[in-house]
Amino acid sequence: MKRLLAFASAVLAVPLGIATPPADALGAGVCTITGTINFDPQKSPSAEGAWSIGPAAIACQGLSKGPERFLGQGPFTGSGSYSVLPTGTGGCLHQVGTGTVEYTVPTSGNPLHVKEAHQFVLAGAGGFTTPSLRGSFQQTPPFEGDCVTTPVTRATFVAQAVLVRDVPIYPSEGGQG
Image (cartoon, rainbow, N blue to C red; front, side, top):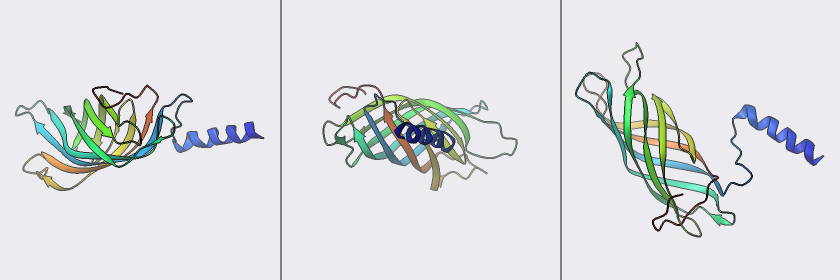
């Protein structure tokens, strides 16, 4: 009976897109990330630019390293480059980007401090991945720029993510997870 329930749960989780952590996962939770994203388009017609996140914060709920729990909110920053996706519609904020994010999540033990690679796709709303985070985000007003006469150079965003750490987590004192 237990095997049947486990099998049924696994089969149902796949179509729903629910990520299940590996058996040796050291932390799992759900997170909200809020803040400001800045876009610095190049002055040339290359349709590329730089992005940065800050100020921003991450807040997670879940477990870290077994009995420890995620507690409260910590800082979230990031930077990298992007390319504008050809849309044919003249739309704005259609981008694909890469870079690095760095964040700290307070826990009931040592804080979780992570610096890792980041990828995103943005077409109005967007999705992003890192080795630990998978999620979606939306940009919300206020915007700096209007996509008609000037490009958007700053926007507020809200992201929802699943956090799964299946590599060792080190204390925030100089370590990376």
